[in-house]
Image 1 (spheres, rainbow, N blue to C red):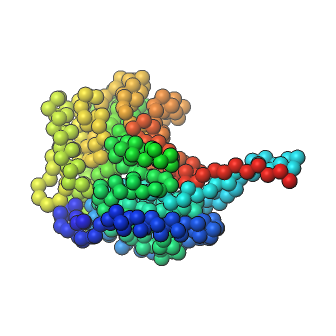
Image 2: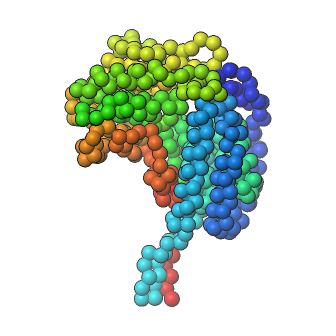
Length: 454
């Protein structure tokens, strides 16, 4: 398998992929070792994961450089991702004892009722390339804390980062037969679905998530899918600082080149502030520096996948063909690398793919609406349900709007953010199940009820 630098299209490294036989051998070792990892105890597992978090800090420049080389993420954004992963790990280790220890529910008249949170066993994690540290730590960190062994498949586009994660986990004290990575592309993921794993945790597209869910359903084991989004944002008529709102929401749309499941993907603006907002938004996007992701000050690097350039180009061309107005960007960049200009479209409709299908790239459609009711109607018109955001000075107004939109997360005066303290979950085509928070820690356990009479 060739690892390609998306900024230069050069081959960074050639890596040997796993076979069905090597995957089976890895699973056998994980299965054999998992009980001893569970017996080690929660306190010691927490200490080991805390050492891993510290190693991320110590090695951040190497890790960020590797991530930038294979994914194309601007170097500062790569550093930010590693720092974000450390923050999530800190929350998970700080709260693991609270949510994974045995829980006494009642105790009276000689009868104690308690819940014990037992590990699932050996879990499979088929992960994503856009934020390999963040979406990875959402899964394998709580899985390890809960006493599970993990067969981790990084995306073929972030395999080197997956190897770095494995190296540092083992250096921190996780046994080599407790965390093992599956190396390869689609066929390796397929083989993982055939293995007798005790749980499947996937991050990626709706199409692939649906396939995985259907494929493993007969096994009657947990399957969680964190899938894509078509995340809406509404700018109300009472926003005070239009320039700041435009800058913040543009960042929500274009950070990491828009390659995020919770990136802002469609914007609705109240007609009273539409013109001023659009002017400031376009001005902000035009200020973004595009170039080599290792160059200082670069905000827009290459897309990670060559195929995504074609998808974005198709969405933009279709929108313009059917009446959309192009304000900036709109085309791929000539030369080496998978670059596409950050693109802003208006006069868009919900008959256009750019407003209905996940873009996962540097393009945004902006629509004018006459009031909150129309904004709610447009925001709710989607098969996805990951996040939704409202900008207004009135908190009760924002919460009222957000409660009418079927999404797993609601934002007031912010967007495109994830907190380890809150569950990360989707509705409809954005998936099911939860990572992070207490729900995410317990997602990797089987609760056992104990009725204990003295």
